[in-house]
Length: 175
Ligand SMILES: Nc1ncnc2c1ncn2[C@@H]1O[C@H](COP(=O)(O)OP(=O)(O)OP(=O)(O)O)[C@@H](O)[C@H]1O
Ligand SMILES: Nc1nc2c(c(=O)[nH]1)N=C(CO)CN2
Image (cartoon, rainbow, N blue to C red; front, side, top):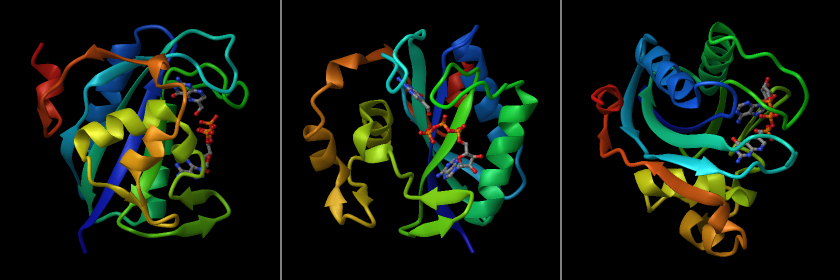
């Protein structure tokens, strides 16, 4: 069975673009997973814990035969492989991979909630996601994410940092 998932990637330590690219390379290497689209890269003001450096954020759309939980395990493995150290919640990180959406499913597991519970509050998630697919809807709230984004006051904290015209992941490695 082929599933469609959207992921959010973020980094605010060291060579932020490099960690994003490496995470995408690792996703591409995953059996049963193909990257369909990548967004541009955005520089974003930190949200939650604000006394930290700006993030680079982007979104990717993947096609996968992995279950949602298998995809989570793979994301955690990639974070670990790239040397992410968990210091504290919402604190700085080399790389963060979150699953935003998995088909149209609502998933409530102890260690996995989909749609990602905080995605509708975060312009740094919605701007890149909507660049990839402007028609996405929120499966629980049954609203278009464009509408959700229009209700978020603080969108100026999200700035285009590197434009990518992205079908597939390989475009990221061309420059
Ligand atoms: N949709 C999801 N995508 C990724 N991780 C999830 C998801 N739902 C629950 N989790 C759990 O969240 C844990 C990691 O949270 P993490 O440390 O990345 O949180 P955070 O990035 O600091 O905060 P936030 O969750 O608000 O983005 C994972 O170990 C995973 O079990
Ligand atoms: N701008 C921005 N702020 C954040 C981010 C992030 O990726 N970008 N991730 C967080 C924890 O998931 C907390 N705050």
